[in-house]
Length: 301
Length: 268
Image 1 (cartoon, rainbow over the protein chains, first blue to last red):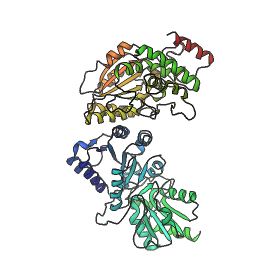
Image 2 (image 1 turned 180 degrees about the vertical axis):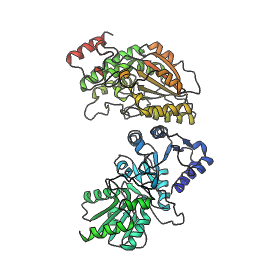
Image 3 (image 1 turned 120 degrees about the vertical axis):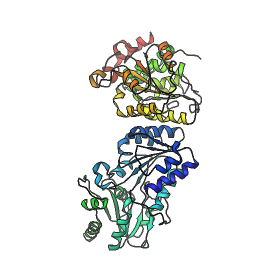
Image 4 (image 1 turned 30 degrees about the vertical axis):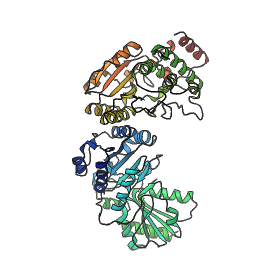
């Protein structure tokens, strides 16, 4: 997914010299093509994310559209106040890319798990938060970042995008995935969980929708939820304040009396190794565990 | 009307005293510390057009120590960016003349308040100017205590690597920070050597000597290095009982202190 996103940037930047890509000395094997074709539009900022974000804000104040690039929490939490004060407050065109969202960096450990970023960043005024689930949504998100004004945060999973699997999506809507879209159960997900959602749906029939833009929430949310009997959210993110919380807030604020089951990571640090799937299981978010949770909660409703 | 640095500095100290007294706010010492530096910048160094705050070729000035904004608002009003009447709204309900530099005010480039931010942003602005081959200067005024922030040193590294000779940092080196003297909190010395080691062009001056400030700002020569002026200042400069004291970082004057300060500044 990161390759697809960066390639979108590269193609746009070739035509538009006001597009700049700043990296915090990361992007091995990912940024090479961008750097080789337009080296003057990529700046390696060194391992200094606070300055990367401040410089990005300065460049954006002078008319550039700037993308900052790093992995995990480095482009977000490490420089959170620069994002808040220097990017969000003046609403400049700075777009913050985080690679390996959720547990994508697996055995690299807690430092590389971006599992609280959505809850923290969605609370910042003026900042759009994107989390595409597949190639189609990556392209839609990249186009939004290249055309819309104002800052954004983009969390990109490490999973490989299937560039052949193009479906019709919009960046500001819930996008249906699969044929079962009329099911009374609806599962909303984002980021790296689409395959997991499909596996759950094989055991518990439900309509799957992906949500590439978490903030603001999708414009068609009300229509998507109409006539449903149960909402399930699934994300590789801390349950406290994440996407599931955002949906819960929406249901409360709009007085929509639908039961909600939030599937996500508990509020703990994961201390053992494993792939993102293995870590999900350790955290109680494996497919079988999700199915069991859903069945238990629905039974006891 | 041509105004001299000394006339402007005297006026903005009086304004700041009134503003902070009315607001019952703080940072008088920090404001008085930079009044002379600002007076020289806005009468002798910066290119700007007060009628066109966003004039593309203007020099960009960023106040990194945003808590000293009362004197900057006053300077901007006194050189014509907005009416001095507006200074009376400082800190008041509904006003955008906030207690830290606020970019909705004409002439303010960046909203600041949290220390350690503006040098990075200024570096980005300077980099943009260089990339676009524009002639404007980017000037950022930092406090000494602010140099505790690691983000400042990230920007210092970056600016010299990219040879941003259109970037000017000025250090308000009054040797006192929020709760104590710099030497007692986190020692900065040898400060000049630090900046030189980071490959900046370094000059020093008495931060209250108008001629010296102007001469040093105009003495920078390097075309491959960013520039830093270490301005040796006195916190609270201009009011005898406020000078070189930790107390007047936060203290708001009572009626007697206000009257005494006003009397001293009136007769300056």
